[in-house]
Structure formats: structure tokens, C-alpha cells
Image 1 (cartoon, one colour):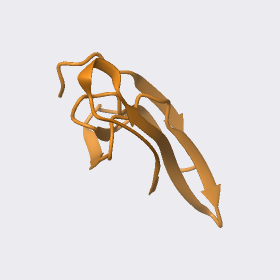
Image 2: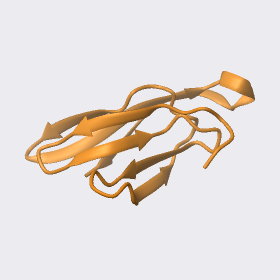
Image 3: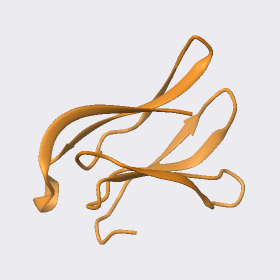
Length: 87
């Protein structure tokens, strides 16, 4: 995945428990892993590495995961963005 230590975050949504959301990687991607077998469910490119803890919210019955992207650690690109994905 990456040569950078990363943080794994447990997110519980109405429909699924994600064993790990990983976004703190030098390749600026966020990944979600299956709760049962650890398989990669999806990954997406972020504008900057996301060293913050992702959060889940719901609007109109639809769930989203949002993460603050900033980078700047360990020589990674730096910026300020919030990115949300529908689940």
C-alpha cells in the first residue's frame, strides 16, 4: 500500500461496519475494507493525503463519508480540502 505508517479507522453506518478506512498514505487514496474478510471494497483518489479521521453523516436517507485532506506530513503535497463520498 504505502511506505508510510497509516491510521485505520472503524466506521459504523446504518448498513455496514467498515473494518478499516485508511486514508493516511502518501499515495493520497482513501480505502474501505470489508468487516468480515478484510477485502478491499473500494478506493478513491484524494486531492491530498487525508490524515484526519473520516466521518459518516446522513442526508435524506443517503449516507456519506467525509474526510479532511491536507497533507504536508513527511514530504507529501499540502493543501486544504474536504472530500465526501456517497456510500
